[in-house]
Amino acid sequence: MAFPHRPDAPELPDFSMLKRLARDQLIYLLEQQHEVDKLYKVENKPALSSNEQLCFLVRPRIKNMRYIASLVNADKLAGRTRKYKVIFSPQKFYACEMVLEEEGIYGDVSCDEWAFSLLPLDVDLLSMELPEFFRDYFLEGDQRWINTVAQALHLLSTLYGPFPNCYGIGRCAKMAYELWRNLEEEEDGETKGRRPEIGHIFLLDRDVDFVTALCSQVVYEGLVDDTFRIKCGSVDFGPEVTSSDKSLKVLLNAEDKVFNEIRNEHFSNVFGFLSQKARNLQAQYDRRRGMDIKQMKNFVSQELKGLKQEHRLLSLHIGACESIMKKKTKQDFQELIKTEHALLEGFNIRESTSYIEEHIDRQVSPIESLRLMCLLSITENGLIPKDYRSLKTQYLQSYGPEHLLTFSNLRRAGLLTEQAPGDTLTAVESKVSKLVTDKAAGKITDAFSSLAKRSNFRAISKKLNLIPRVDGEYDLKVPRDMAYVFGGAYVPLSCRIIEQVLERRSWQGLDEVVRLLNCSDFAFTDMTKEDKASSESLRLILVVFLGGCTFSEISALRFLGREKGYRFIFLTTAVTNSARLMEAMSEVKA
Image (cartoon, rainbow, N blue to C red; front, side, top):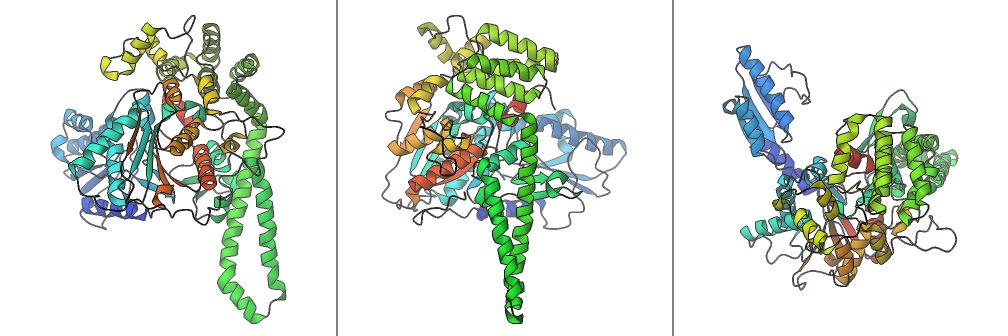
């Protein structure tokens, strides 16, 4: 389902300019376009280069600084002099310079910044490629990346703005928005008088909707990500997919015509589509048989190359589907999905808890077991103390006591919490919890901070009708709503919020939902006059996910766009899924 857009659908902006800007800036920083002798990956071993200049292109991380310091100090010991340059991307942090100073090499290196914060992964998807954003902000409360987000929004608004309508929900969204607005005011006039290309921008924090990110993905692109891990828009298909002894790196975007037609499809439809495609391809090859020489010449020069390319892609995606099927059959995927749907709907909670216990006892996977426990906790508004203790004990006995700190992290983030006795928020508690959510007030206690992050999922689900009521089977071939991305069982909360706010052009009428999301102080709207915005630009919506978004959410919003005549553009700090979310919280590195 490539979601053929309606003939009146607005055109997407051309994001290739972002790549050109980044490339030109890097060339300027390197001071020469060529003469790069050799590229080394920054890892825990010396770069054996005889060059007189070393240039490090790194993320601003402490461990990278220690690595650079060890190389420079090794050169000093060996009596060797070279020039060193450190280019930080997307920005330089004071903490990194402090480490260089501590290590005694600050005077030996020159530092620069490469503000490459927006990587176009596809025609409608921009990523900041900051997977650490999620843990840094939502667990550690570290706000340093918010400035990077504000700078990225400022760049987009300079190139494609101004954005007449802004909406947002979440503490981080509000901070990023305010910082970005300050930047706009400082450079007032840059976008004044310009016609907006993008009519709406919507900022959303990941912790507004953890449930969607914790669910197993069943649209093709999401399943490929869950199974093989898509990194920077490409995937490594191993020999089991390529049917050879080699692995192959494949770029997954709209240019892959086969992939583009199945990426948003529910997996149950993909095999049928691919086999039909294979038959059509064969029929096109078979046309050669009755051709004369002139026709054959035209066929070879104009069509054959395209057919061969399509054949190669078709083989790869059929191989990927077979590999996914094998893995999922082995894991008893149907049983897993049934449990997830029961948790979302709030049925058979005891049975679901027993399934999770069995999952832990069989040591299926530490990350998967954690994910299911978190899904149970969030959908049930926290676990009753008896269940919490029992599941935690079983988990630590099964997977090892080294996971103990992970439980503390999950509790702090509000992902796996224990209900307090007689768990209702009294007036005093809600006042204290309001205090606690404010980082400036300091962390009073973990117990109270988990109170502040009550999920209220059941009440929100009811209010927003997230569980569709369907008579008979849900037709996944002809989806009726966004719930198809989870087999018809659940409409992603994040996408429903976006849909409702766009319909109303405000948060009006959603006060109760905002309150249940614990975001009463963090839902905002900023509308400017729309006289300069064309009707086409008002149907283009930029959605900004802070803390990561999943391919399921992207597919759901593409579907909504097709239904309503919108086009969505996605900007995310990184593409995420349930495993990445759990790994970010884990203290045990795989």
